[in-house]
Length: 296
Image 1 (cartoon, rainbow, N blue to C red):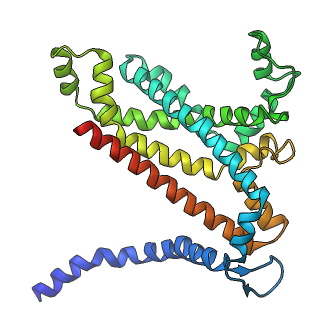
Image 2 (image 1 turned 90 degrees about the horizontal axis):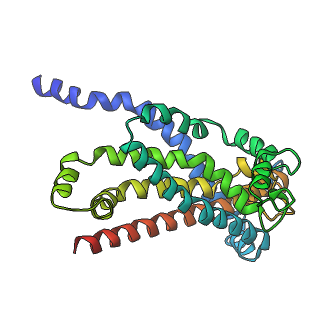
Image 3 (image 1 turned 180 degrees about the horizontal axis):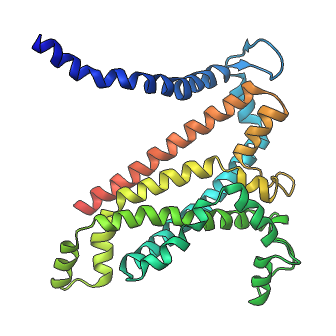
């Protein structure tokens, strides 16, 4: 009897978790399985039935110039915004960590990330206006205003959108790095200071190596977010001028709900998922190799 009661106690928490596991299966596993199966089929929204087409959707994807353009837009925003967010977020976190007045500045710095991206996009849409926008006025004040709305020209629209993403998500990187700084023992920094290490040596040889995990988390989250960027672009430019700022997520939505080609859209989403996994593996390998090189 004692062993039976002990077994019941051990297995009892699992029975409480069964509903949660079922919900996770319905929400996560089923859509993923449906997406993969639909990517090998021809499915049109509003029409019954599905026809297996093998790799035809992926062949269309390879030859679709609009797909490659949307991927280029996404990658350019990623390369513009994410490195700047990592650098700026780290610098702000270092200043907050060293400041005695962090409680005064900390709430104000969190304002961008509590705003929804669609609202941020609409706000910056008006801030970029050449006649009355705040950004145009500031650029005019310092003599850098080119004389037009930055989001209406092909050479400036992607840097402008990257700036919007940078403004909103740099505090997110700051939070992650600040959490990593708080876990570094003060005794380690004090010992290095007593040994004669300069501020730069303490930062480059102690702080940066101990923040590798935080940098990886920030890179992964921000890369995934930029890969699916939609709200900011939709609110600011609608993908224009032309389709020059049309991201992968925007073209995916157009393929699924305007062209109603659900099979092609699922193949598109599956390709983006594989690209995200590949990018995450690249990040992990680079950080691991740098950690191995630093430990030698």
